[in-house]
Image (tube, rainbow, N blue to C red; front, side, top):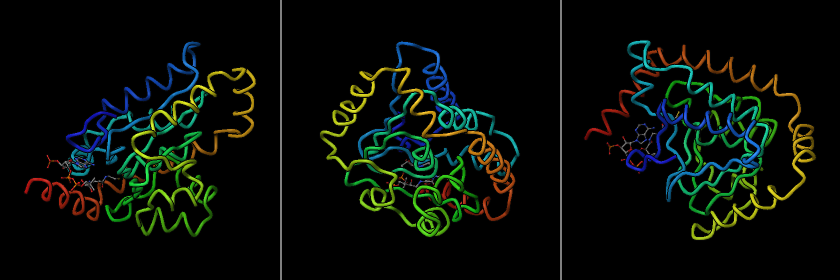
Amino acid sequence: MDRPEKKNALTRVMYDQMAEALEDANTNDDVRVSMILGGPGAFTAGNDIADFLKFAQTGEGLGMEVIRFLKAIACSQKPVIAVVDGLAIGVGVTMLFHCDMVFATPRSQLKTPFLDLGLVPEAGSSLLAPALMGYQRAFEMLCLGVPFDADAAWRAGLVNHIVGEDVIEETAMQAVRLLASKPQEALALARNFMRGDRTAVTERLEAESAAFRVRLRSEEAQAALSAFMARSKT
Ligand code: COA
């Protein structure tokens, strides 16, 4: 993700490109592992709020790109590794629930302000977060919306390793190389057993997505999104 001037907020084009890369990896023998990177200090500030606001106000401007990306990462047939340095907001957090390994720097802050924006958790997180970290901690993350620092995210099981920003990419690459050196058929089988049938996850992310779109048109969401855009202009 490379849009530093907007803290890597994700546009429809960016979702499409990421979905395409993940889909291609499934059938491309040259790809053994996918890696998701942001930039120094910002993994991603989540969905582009201008796109959300446009849909909230007009009912237009949000296509199927987000859901394409979410399904691609949820159903990826190859391992996906994330490198988080700094801010991870909204989908920047919920995409991590689909990753096989997550590396984060000590300065990372993971935050899901869905409720504050009048929205609901997405990306299957309402299913995956309680399963990973227990209901109460998931509630604190997804409903209270408090930031989880790297240590809290590690304790919650969402982050594998906390690594300094100067070495995080190389450390993650070591795991990538190790995975790439494994017998690939055995790895695919092991991974499929561990991740299980993805039907429940894709059904949940579709249901959340439908609710999310309805919520975007709500007065609560319109007020919160307008307030953010007004703030960013001053
Ligand atoms: N969508 C669109 N633009 C965004 C954005 C987003 N999700 N997040 C940040 N930006 C833009 C800001 O509008 C600003 O643009 P400008 O310079 O043209 O005004 C630029 O990125 C830098 O952000 P800024 O707010 O000045 O940086 P900051 O360090 O003070 O704060 C954040 C960074 C990420 C904490 C803050 O921008 C934020 O809360 N963003 C919204 C996150 C969010 O709610 N995402 C949706 C989750 S569902």
